[in-house]
Image 1: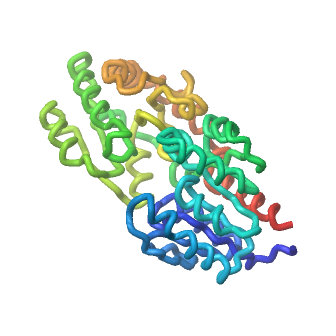
Image 2: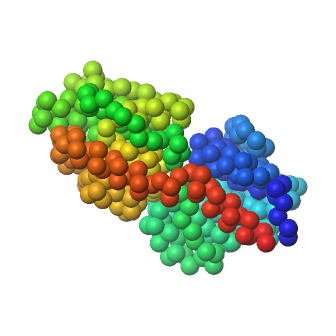
Image 3: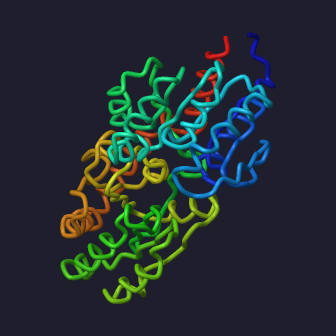
Length: 355
């Protein structure tokens, strides 16, 4: 087939996800006609979004299979791409009907969900073995996918950071600013960060850093109450979910970024912080070890507030180390992890499937 600038790419993906919107938008910019089939309606500029309006729960994913097959027959796309293997990826695998099929793993769909039951494990393998190309954003996920022995090549494609927006800039010496870009829910251990900050105050009261919290989420009330109970409220800044330009502005003004989830693939927030020239403190996970070492920050045990407090103290008390680590991190991610670089790679892989 001759690939034209109007080749039709059908995504099965959550149209409400910022990751979906950025990926689809990048492909629109690169000359694809893009359609997104999503459970719920959300606008994506430049793309057609088709809402299936399926209810919550496991059974609706199976019940909707005839509908998604009919949708693919009616749209006749050139290529089908499912984002998140154990949900939208399953739909894409059921519906591709001989068209090139791409699957992208997001993290828990490979590292967590298949362990919940034999059925989930079997369905994950069934889905992966129908792909013509599989992508994931960390080496540990690539390794885990390989255990299912898919027939398709498996490639690392990052969500990437906007390295033009997230870039180093001069920062005020005081106040010291810590930034967290992770959502306010149990997986991301914001409570551990707050407890570590309280321990830091006991050990090194002269540092007194601000903590700028972005992301938002269902645990906001409980976390605010915890912060108040620990006596941290005057130095906590609850930004929540903000547009990317504002997010980048807050990150560029910080001195240190913290990301300590229980589980993760390559985190966009880590890449964005590194691109902005920040030193990092991250939890000891394979995906984090792929990007962070002693030249760029500190790796701490999962869910360990005392160890996190010690890492914060060692870095915030050493401005020269912060600057050196920030420079290293910027060089580490730019241009390799730039969003534009990664989306150019993906565009090339798509077009290779249509030749």
